[in-house]
Image 1 (cartoon, rainbow, N blue to C red):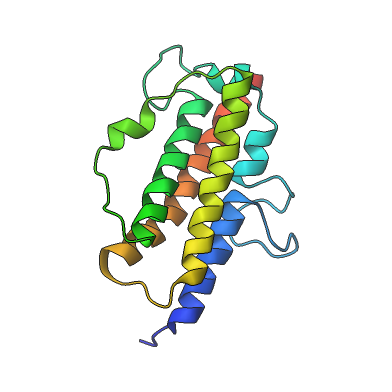
Image 2: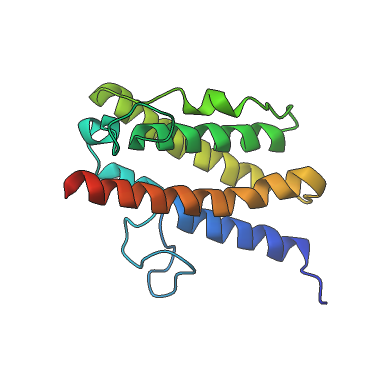
Length: 163
């Protein structure tokens, strides 16, 4: 089996992370999301109101039932990996990431700004790396399917709320 040189691996991670959050770097050739400019997490959330972000799709206030809770969960997970890439310890209390369920317009704007900032922090930290291995590599790679899962979930929530 051929091995992938580290710079190629890091570049691939950045390409897919960018597609997940910022949208397709090249709309004519995406890897897994739609070709539309706002099809990444950040673009999708930019078109969601605070009221929509706070409305539960199933009537409950359980973790994961609002768009705001998914946005905060993604922000939290990015912040954890960004900290880990800086050499800080990995927190294990994932329940903490689901504490936000409702937001007012100001909180929603702040949460979206923080989510973008954490995405940029992770991207910047990856660009500064010369190596990734072990749990740090796995945690960084896990950001990709994690973002794809929540992107799909948020898309479905938006469709259900607007139906």
